[in-house]
Amino acid sequence: MLRKHRNLWCDLAFRTDHATSGKVDAGWRAAFVEFPDRFMVGTDSFTPERWHYIGEHADWSRAWLADLPRDLAERIAWKNGESLFGSFSQP
Amino acid sequence: MEKRRVAVRLLLAALAFFGSAQACVPPLEGTRLESKTLVLSFSASPSVGEFFTMEVAACAKPGHALPDELKVDAQMPEHRHGMNYVPVVKRLAPGRWRAEGLMFHMPGKWQMSFELRGKGGAERLSHSLQLSEGFSKEETAKIALHGPWPPRPRKDPSNRVSGKPEAIALGEKLFFEPSLSGSGSVLCATCHAPFRAFQDGRPRAVGVAQADRNTPSVLDVAFSRWYGWDGAHDSLWSQSLRPLLDAREMNASAEHVAHALRTLFGREYEKAFDRKPSGSDEALLVDAGKALAAFQETLVSARTPFDDFRDALMREDRDAMGKYSPAARRGLRIFVGKGNCALCHFGPHFTNGEFADTGVRFFAAPGRVDAGRHAGIKRLKDSRFNLLGRYNDDAQRASATGTRHVEAQHRNFGEWRVPSLRNVARTAPYMHDGSLATLREVVMHYSQLDEERLHADGEQILKRLQLSADEIDNLVEFLKTLSAPDAR
Image 1 (cartoon, rainbow over the protein chains, first blue to last red):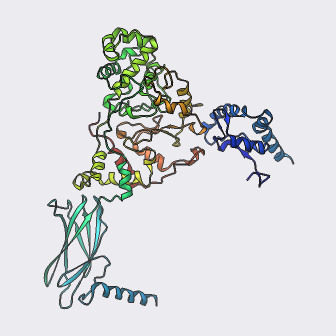
Image 2: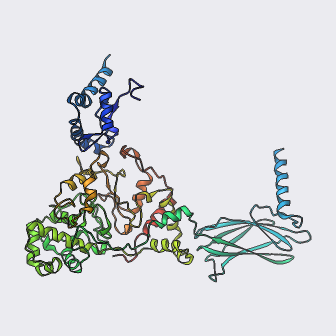
Image 3: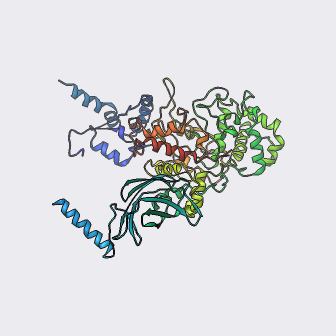
């Protein structure tokens, strides 16, 4: 789908199987490498309690991001989000 | 045109059914009975233990008078008794009646009798029907999975004194010993009171101070895979250490417990562990947990009305099945069917032993979250008393496989252990924080579930059940049958 739809981005709130114990799954790694500008870290806050999980989620994300090349990790961690939402905010 | 086609079809059907000998057709579709002078038709849908209405119609054969009066009765010839209620028959029109207030109170063979009286005298007709308990093969197979009970005892390979009588005796003494607590005023039985099915009836446990969670019963606790609402322990003996050391519960230390063992229970300890209580404080603390576990392993709940019904269903003993209330039976059908409760509350223990997000709020206090299973897995992994540690008596460490592989995931945040439903009527209030006071409130929770509160990871199992008032009543009645009337 990412190959077919150039305006498709993914936030990673919907999966946990891309990394286990801080190690990125090989298939997911290949997807990240092929589409370095299309993935973003994200999380849901669908209940008031969930707001208290955001720090925990960030720690977990930092662990598997550290398993990627730094440039790729930074893109997924914040640069892609900044770029995407920055482009939306352009007049 | 349409009406004519229907009429022709009915006429053909009547001719095919009655043949040339049939001389009249009663004005009612249903089961037909025939005598020399009349034909009777009746229609009813009885089910065990429920009042039902029967529609009856009759027509007179040529040369005979239509009867004026109808009496309806039913017997169980194999049991030599009739119905518990006398039905009332209303005459709706010539040759047309309605019998109300019938009830077949147990499954089995019922012999129905119809007595018709008129100017031509009396006619008696009868009809037999086999009334089943009403469960399909699929439902029966699901019900079978909730037994047999009690389960066979099993020893805990991680506890070298599991099942040892001397350890059980020591564990029982420790369970009722206030000196184990730091304050000298709290015992295990403070929260796990035998006369309250080994829990305390409070929303949240109160030891030295109030804790965050509801006290679970320790009945049948030998058969769990994970312990505590958050599964932070992987053995009964390590779980037994937690309240000893928790500042809000018994507020003791390894040193304190070891001292109590050496000074108060030296002789009992030696019998249980075949050595003097001379080990380190921590080793003695663990041994206290293992003796407590040995005692708790003996706390197996008694058989319940559900168990009797389930076993009767398996051996098709209709007399025994008849003792189970119709409302409970209807609730059981919801439990294994529409409600799909049995998916998580599975097997003889009525739990799959795992954890679930059921849409219950999990703020322990304003602004403070109790993270449930997510934090429990971390505590388990970090504990030196887990099954991967030095205190596991299972040299092969086969018992530690789950602990080795379990890993916290996002979805574990706010998940709680699926509790057993055995003795559930005796263990109010409910949920991990005791926030629901009655069984009815619990059923209402699932009936009106806020699906927006459920996490999106993984498969969505729960959905709003939207039960009727009757269905809620029946499900509650079923849940009540999971407790033995005289349960400990």
